[in-house]
Picture 1 (spheres, rainbow, N blue to C red):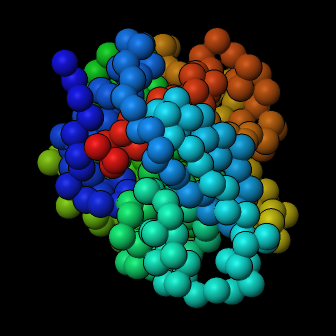
Picture 2 (cartoon, rainbow, N blue to C red):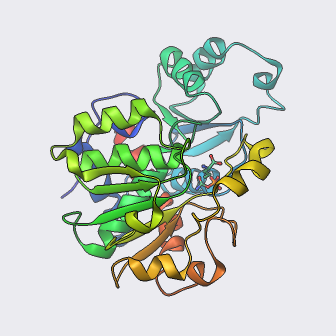
Length: 308
Ligand code: CP
Ligand code: NVA
């Protein structure tokens, strides 16, 4: 009988905060929650949510996950709590540690998330920062595993901005030994520290490729993945990025160059005619809504492991 194991690290700030075995374990527990009527009781446990940026999927999936586990959530809206008035993170973190059992935070600077984790005695989860989106990557790899039954020989190609989502795909991909190719315009490559950490982790260094050529990156790929060109907080760069990213849209021409059974993923929200065409988005290859559903199961598993 599978039971959620406690993770070595108290916090989940980065995809690399778990080991390969722990990552595989979280995905196994997620599949049990999804398919086998498996449940555990986290009665009376409280998840605090601090979201400095908008969210639909992350917010709702954390709420539903906690409710299915028998616990509850407190949504600390930064504009109506003292957080928005500038109370120091170290004070907020120490106070919330006395009330909550776990805290999920979506914010801009990754260093702010680390500051919360430094002062919190309870687990802190990264619900997206400018640097990483590790909860998204868990759901993404769960979706890939469900589709192909294995990670062996699966090629994941991400086309777009080398942003938080791409960074977490690279890091989680390095843990799981998947081939990850990133195609982005010059100057929009993923974070160099992230790339170096991933190369350290990969047993086979050829499995990570960063290129500026989407046509090359897509050849024979099993998974085509994209994300918005302008992330939250980059609204003022939209016009410029729309120009620079011209040629990086996932359209049917690009899809034809991938493996014939390739699937399409997108973390959502999506902007049709920018990073993806409506035709590709709505095609049979789309696993985007399974991927969105898997946010729930993988976060339920993550919470169960962090709190067990
Ligand atoms: N993919 C994702 O994190 O979606 P939200 O911004 O809606 O949470
Ligand atoms: N890169 C996007 C992801 C949204 C889920 C952003 O940060 O806005």
